[in-house]
Length: 407
Image (cartoon, rainbow, N blue to C red; front, side, top):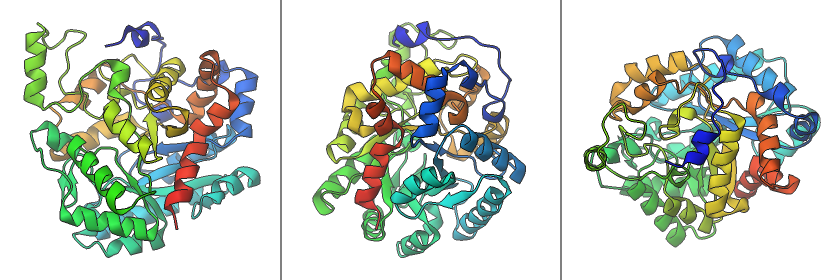
């Protein structure tokens, strides 16, 4: 593990639970950085299903209003995940979110075209873009992708953590499943390209991501994919793509045991390799680096700091270049509820106990963007990033991809 991250830890006092209660770094940012966020487009990504990160409309309203007040343009919001495995469940989640956002004082604009982000920014609105992290709700019918387009779904993962009809997720591959993209998955990609839904590779196994990018390069040339919320393993000096037994063997060979600082329960879990990132960059795509702390491989202070988040972003830029990196908190609003959700859906999080262990060790922060971005701007400026660089990172790169992929 690289010590540059450990050296940057600020063991600040913070609440036991994440995001809505997380440490607020905004007032520690310079007025110049605060104004930069207000003056420019900044697009977040967060994943807080009903009864996971929130269960009251007022919680969603509070979240949106603070983000809007501090200049966050909007966010890609997850609707589909393990809690919505059927079409009926997905529709119900869609309705709950559409109802909740109306509770916000901020005026909301639903994103239908790339230029809507600029319109929201100019008009003082909060932009909401719908995302799905699974294709389970298709229930084996690729024709339903057209209905997703009509609902306004703009980005979608073919696979979540486990194995789906479309392919294999990262946790299933940790368990030893080496298979990849299925024929049904190829049909879903064809439908997504046809109906202008961006292909998202986060949560997806190495083999499945390779199969997807190979398939798209052959049959859908010029159409980029994205990683909507994935850190890079190389930032932490860890080994991606191992199975759990392979990780255990490597730990034992290095004389490490549970409780040691560098011991890993799982093989980087949700972090992607440089090769995966470069494959998407070569397509013209974007890797949005998440600030969700439990994904940081063993670096678990009480809350993620702006300097840590800047180092995560910088690590990705060093691999794929400034034109292919974005930001994404993958914030879940309340970790207390996320832990309960993970335990309830244990069959979807068979990660050798990694996620729960991370929370137990103090991984509470998800880098809620309204509380982190201005201070992260200061840190990136210190690293030598220009204003134009930050505009690309905070939204420009993603909007370029959306212009290429949406109809």
